[in-house]
Each structure stands twice: as structure tokens, then as C-alpha cells.
Image (cartoon, rainbow, N blue to C red; front, side, top):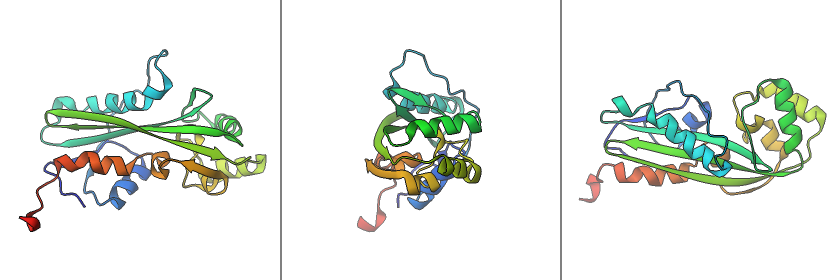
Length: 197
């Protein structure tokens, strides 16, 4: 468990990111700020998640003070196209039918804004889906309401439990935060270990 020199802010309303940071042993406050999630049309899809994470962090720069702000954004990529959060039930069904029986990529960009520095990085996981039936998709949308999730699914939900056949990369990146990389990135901001002095 890291003890940081500055208070840590998780700039996300995602309950999944909150749980992951808690399970990783961090103490933090949650603070979100309205941020548009638009990106240039000609931006390579591989750059989008990190770009949006940095954009979210910039909203805190003017009044950062002595704090560390952690921002993240997750995108699902299929056929070099980004599948965003679904607009409605029909859009969620469309995306899940597209993902069914195919391999896609999930990229989570992270930005850490701290006094006098900003760092950012991206992690990618490849996900192989089993073929999903219409009944499975209908059940998932009805029970789990995946309207706040990129690509219309959560790896920890029903669809992930029954549909993900294989992962190449971190499961937590698919959930929305590559905790192994976040932990290493925050280490330089940790307090000295007094027990070893």
C-alpha cells in the first residue's frame, strides 16, 4: 500500500474504477468535472483513450494545488472503429451483435496530474468473445443496463462472465483501469518508508 505525499483525487464517477482503486489500497477522494468526450475525427483510434484522459485532467490544472488527480478513459475498438457508450437499448444491441464471436481491443488511457508534472500512458487488452445469442443479449441489456460502458459491456458483468473466451492483457484494463501500471506510476509520489530508515 502506497502512502502518497499529496492527497489523491480520482476524477471518475465510475463505480468500477472506485472499487479497483480501493482494492489496490489507495486512499482517495472522488471529484468529477463536466468534460466533453469529443476528439478530432482524424485522430488515430489508438490515441483516443489517452487523449481523453489528458483532456479530463486539464480541467483540474487551474486549481490543482497540492493534489494528485487521476483520470482515465476506456475505448473499445473493433475493425479500427471506436464503440462508445451506447445511446439507447437498440444501440447497445447493435454493438453487442457486432462484438459477438469476434476479437476486439480495449484501450484504457490514464493521466496523472500532480504538482509540476503530468504523465500519461495507455494499456491495451485483446478480448475474444464467444458467439452471443439474441436471448443472451436481451437478458444482459435488461438486467445489467450497460449504458454507461464503452462497447456496451462490462467484463465483470453477465456478458463478460459467459462471453469472454480469452484475454490477452490485463482484465482490469478492460474494467477501466490498468491498476498494475497506475500503482507503478504513483510510486514516485509515495512517502519514504520510515520502517526501513
